[in-house]
Length: 211
Image (cartoon, rainbow, N blue to C red; front, side):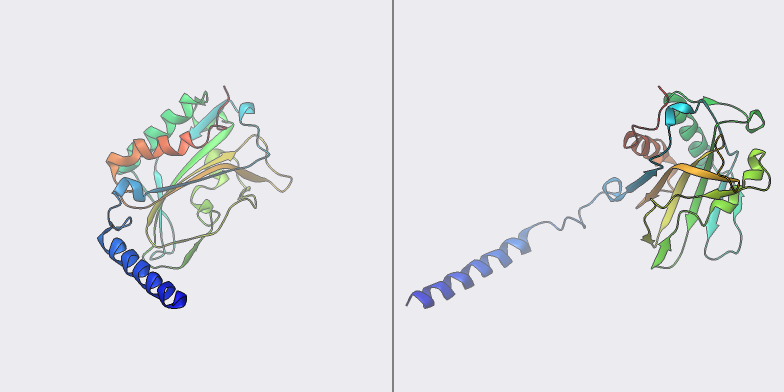
């Protein structure tokens, strides 16, 4: 009898659980566009962000796609807002914006990534060629990404921000990425969302300051 009662109780509990689940909201279905966005940030743990004083930023945004062999440069309203918002965020952290000819301590590169298929590994180094060190007045060098980067899979439009150290090239003339942000999710290419996405990325990177 005890076994029968146990089985009946288990069946009743399972039925109640199924009924409750059927009446509940689907958390993914009810997620807003803002809630779907992911801000991935990484930094070089060896970098002393207080040692940098100046930065320069690109005058357009690189656009990469798996449907094209090379990157193109763009300056849409979105790109202008991205340049403006990132510049303002860097200045709010105590860094001074200068022309690239003034030999800044930091170089800020911006990239939009548009891949149309799934299961693509995110390798933060593959877009570095879009803004080579020669653009910043350091011909013959190359970029270097430390091993702290993690591989992600992507199947959507993304935006990336890379901050490179121009003060301290490696022995083989590489310029290290000291901070990186990657945006994923719904609306990351929406101009109206740029300011809040930049703010979110900097908010979770409190170490990025020279104050």
